[in-house]
Image (cartoon, rainbow, N blue to C red; front, side):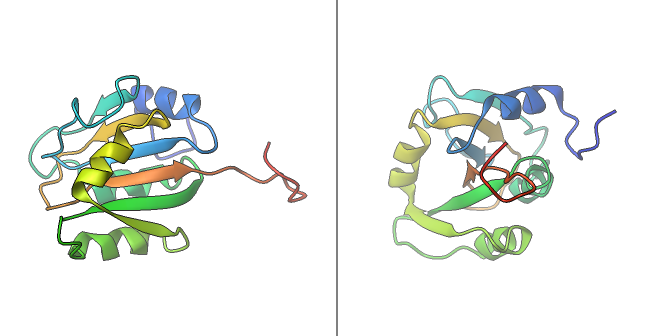
Length: 145
């Protein structure tokens, strides 16, 4: 039995293939999953129904499964902040956030270092989130292991 909250086999396999500097996209239910992601990114569809699962629920599990170094959220073309952003920050409060306008976000999500797309059933506007995988320091604090 695993000691992590995450027990989804495809998701665990995809996460195990990522390394420091790789990006994970957690998309909302309206995201263009196939056309606004890198063709080689593994795609895990957790969008069972509208509202199930949310990006926040997936983030809660991921933060205890892989180290996170940075995050980026999609803003509307006018750059307006969305209520969901504060929710994400409360889940990963020590992670720096970048704000990227919608079409620039799509371009970023298509980059080759985005190795995993997790489709959620989130129905909130602009609930898309990019997460950069960090690294774990060894017990002496001398780099990754």
